[in-house]
Image 1: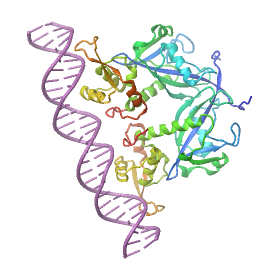
Image 2: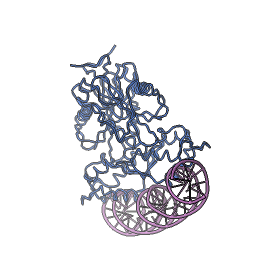
Image 3: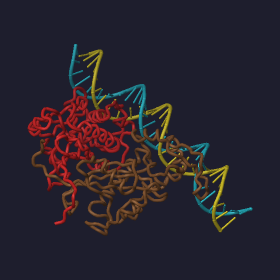
Image 4: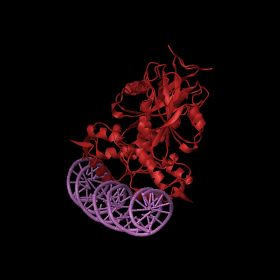
Length: 233
Length: 233
DNA sequence: CAATTATACTGTATAGAAGACACAATTTTA
DNA sequence: TAAAATTGTGTCTTCTATACAGTATAATTG
């Protein structure tokens, strides 16, 4: 068997930024560490890449272990590789971010990992370079959401237009005009009227829609200026 | 000293997609390999990450070794990590792409590496997963150029508006209207009239501009819908 | 010198999107 | 019963993207 001469072997880790939405605020799934290093502090969910495991599969494994969820929106963000980013050993970390329907998670799995949903606005200080990872993930989320219709990934199966509006308001930390938002969303033909009404809302008036998954696939691959009115700052 | 238990050490490589522009077509700097593995075939420029080297520094080192250039536009694209992507050993590759002013390169360094500028439209088949890397880099370039004014990175210090237009036509493989393009570029205030004229042109001497670097910094960080008329297909 | 070609600049018309704003309908709450 | 909250639909204005016309200029070519 041929080998490469001399190159050094380096630890390859993965970290996962998991976004969720509870109807009001954008949330992060964070771990209160009860293991070393940095026990007692907050961090992202992570793990090491196994030798016989595809990188993408490792990211899915880590997400599944923590949330019990598969087939979520999961996208590679960037690889962080500063020499001293991990004080224990030289480790590079391939970072993924996920969008999760917060209602479908496995609560037991989350408890077992000592993980909690934290409002983005109340994010605690994280270990290592995890703060920078979250910053960049949020920037990327804003990019993506401006060009593609990924806001739906954070919604439950059935949702009202005002609920969807709140997702976008949370992502961009801004206020949108109800009437213009509604018109724009409807014009995309991404929504299918379920005929049901939202019985949980205060006025019980809201139409419940579900996603037109076929149309949605187009919007994921095609370029669409989804919200030019929003700035990415 | 503390160590992590059990995780496997994996080889970490870097590969670099280097874009250039010769006034007509978008080009790639590719290597005709005279070393193993896959000697005789075409590949991207690459190398291994050293143990005491930042990831970003390694990418710059690789670009410098090949082109003699520093301070180019260099951005991390994505990390490729399928188990069998490199048949020799388990290696993940962190991929960067660079935009290079083709006039400023070090021709000797390029020759020493047996590298050649190849028109993107005539790209040969590359080793391993390098074809997929190039595909994704082009997609990312189109994204970036639609939102930020990075077309200038491919230009020489002084250039005319029609030359710049050709860069954008090459990136998106399309034709643009002269009059609208000119008006749009001028309205960005990114260009400074040097007073000189293009002595190389065959017919009427075009005005030579240089980049307003201050304004350009804004356009790099701010979100700007730079070319909505272009599709990213 | 006339024809050709590439450049620069100024217009203009149209379609469509963005954004501001009005009003009606339904249900809860006080 | 009245007020408040929430949702849905409609309309108007402004602005921008884009297509397309025209004029002037500078250099080469035959």
